[in-house]
Length: 215
Image (tube, rainbow, N blue to C red; front, side, top):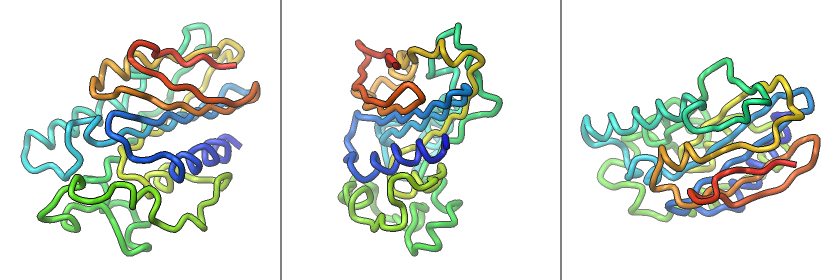
């Protein structure tokens, strides 16, 4: 159920949300037993300042440093201490400009984000909206059990998936995203959708208003 709930949110996000520099998307799905899944989507230029494949060692290091931050959810997700939330594994981070060749669906659909497919130009040189809106989504209706790579397939954004377990889910009344804004200063707005046993809703966060209040 958790994957299906998040799939509904993620599917709606991919089809409705444009690729906007400085804006990220956070989807949160919570189960009554304390299981929580978080999906974060960030434009590449918001994460590292560029969206093309790394052109030198310095840019590759920038990507790996940012990936390391996102992989450790304790560095950008502030769970309330009373809820006892923790992750047993590192977050899964997909960076399309370097990970595209590892996505089997790219081969199946005849298009990908691997470096050689974009030799001679960067992502900034073409319309980002085509990748969000232009592909057919008939096979991925909201509500399907999307996995991490299904979500990433429709986006040029960096996609991070966190799975956590909270020992006291009733105490999970907020999530502090302040550390995320500090880690990625170019992030100006974070649009949030959440769904759980107590209801669903949305919010718009910023560095000055970084705490997500949950029902």
